[in-house]
Image (cartoon, rainbow, N blue to C red; front, side, top):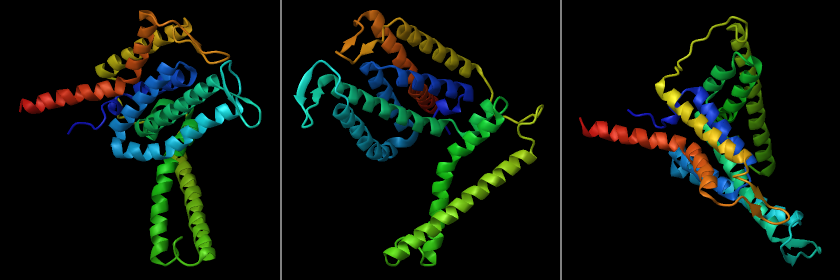
Amino acid sequence: MRHRDTFSSCHPLVNFLYFALVLVFTMFLTHPAALGISLGCAVAYSISLSGRKAVRMQLVFLLPMVLVAAVVNPAFNHEGATILAYLPTGNPLTLESILYGVSAAVLLAAVITWFSCYTAVMTSDKFVYLFGRVIPALSLVLSMTLRFVPKFKAQLRVVSEAQRCVGRDVSDGPVLQRVKNAVKILSILVTWALENAIETADSMKSRGYGLPGRTAFSIYRFDDRDRAVLAWLLGCGFFAACGWAAGGLYWRWYPTVKCAALTPLTGSFHLAFLALCLTPVILDRREERVWKRLRSEI
């Protein structure tokens, strides 16, 4: 059966480099076109990973946060030369502050979506494989942290079901009793989390984790496909970085909106960034076409 996500099956170095590049470009580029490309590609890859239903649930929590970020900036930031109106406090409401608030909201949404894709692709095993020998203690802590949220949610369901069976769920009894039940569940979960962390640390220590000269089994191999994808990422990232350094992706919000002139060269920088962000989707679609062709030949 074909892997559900082709890019996830690549070498961990390729996965980590991809997310490092797209996150760095997203957080430091202020050009609206680049931010739109980043958000669109992040949503597309998130749909490819989790399906439309999961992304729809994610947007339910993400959209209010984005709207708050878009509204807060013009309410407190009054820079800009284009005054649209005056607030009841007497401060001006400027067009530039509104546009910058929308841009900041798009950036926030893109970064959060990219990190959700990162947690789905870069598992704790991949992270430990990459940084276990360089920073063993920190890589172990980070991998445990990344695993903690899904494990905590799963354990919460188990504890809640067990408490419900004995009539001590948060939905049973008066308000005071519900609070006591919730505190009891929280106490159980905290105790479980601390014991789990200690057991994991003792297990890794007993296996010699972090000791010099320690060898480790690995299922990851850097093959020709990984070399090709790595070269593609480095090429697109280098070209986009050159455009960034040369001012081809320049955008200024204050005091007036100003940007680099749109030319075939500056457009090519955006295309390079688009190709970089779409790499997982391109790989997945290419693998899907190959899979369909092979099935048709059977």
